[in-house]
Image (cartoon, rainbow, N blue to C red; front, side):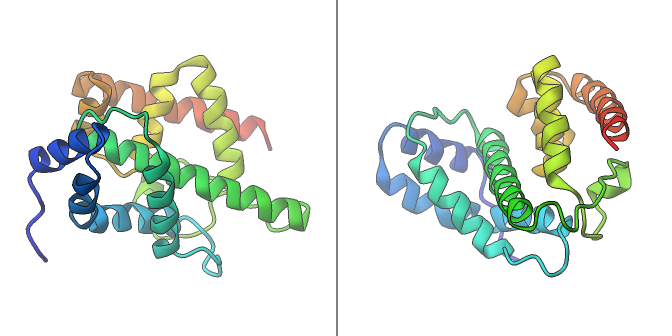
Length: 191
């Protein structure tokens, strides 16, 4: 496996890209591609086995949406991957809603937000219900919702999440615990 690029190099390319340097984007894509594929595989691991959207297609769709995002002033690598995770979540939720609309609710499955789900290869999370609960959490506490999004969907570490949100590691840990409890309560109430 090739060496990972230095976070500072990725951050500088993101800043250059934010400032309009299209060449920076061309240099950035190969540096972040494998990490984006890892994030996409992580998202897809929670989907059913016969899901028609694959990790590569998810990464490609995220690239297309990221390229269209001109107004973002990238702070650093963690900010970029947090935004990428959010875009991938939106893509999957939109896809799930579209499928649900077409099937009128057939095959909906329940979500488990247990710690083991974060690394579980089992497919089947109901992203629409989780997205609705996460949206409700964001209305109450935006940062806690962002922590869930970055940790659960993006696979960011506690340290990366803290860096992206400009908070302490302890704050991320606290927010993560409270948010999981809140979401579990919401998902149980919605049954």
